Amino acid sequence: MNTSITAAQLKAALDGKEPPLVIDVRRPPAFRAAPDMAAGALRRDPGAIEAWAKEKEAIPYDVPDVHFSHDGELCSFDAFLKTYRLAGDPALARLAVIVRGADTARLELAPQAAGLLAVSLGLSRNFRDDHEMLKHGMVMYDALYVWCKEGQDETRTWNPDVYR
Image (tube, rainbow, N blue to C red; front, top):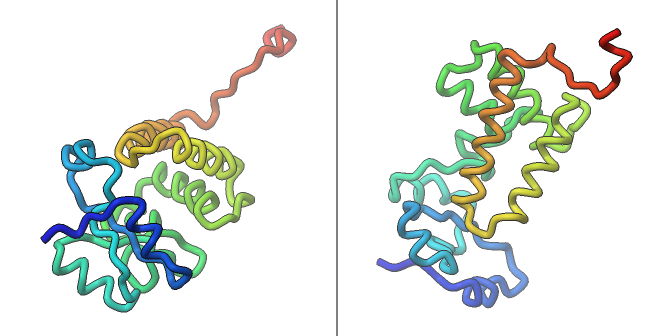
């Protein structure tokens, strides 16, 4: 069953009502073959998301009332760490604070949160293809993880007086 629609069809479907939940479940080759199509762009009752995801063997996240979503002051990244028992990694725990700050508009949680938000928003505007954007975004997250793990004490300066 083809559930893909064009951007024009999606725009026509919006008609001022609740926006549809757009879940692109295609593999990268299919996405590259038809990047102007939105796979699975269907109007869904938020209460039916889990059943739909189960039927499609997908894992929903960042929508209300699913396992991987915001919970109080925590964000989906926190839920991933908890579920996969990764919260014991001190670098991931530090990274979670940065991500939480950027993802919940609480930039005061970590000085790096504003930078993560800025770079994430910039990436989403630089890349039309979500998969390409994610590829570049993962480099950023990997770099932040390494910084959280071993680079926090390092600084850069162009001030020669520091070295005298």
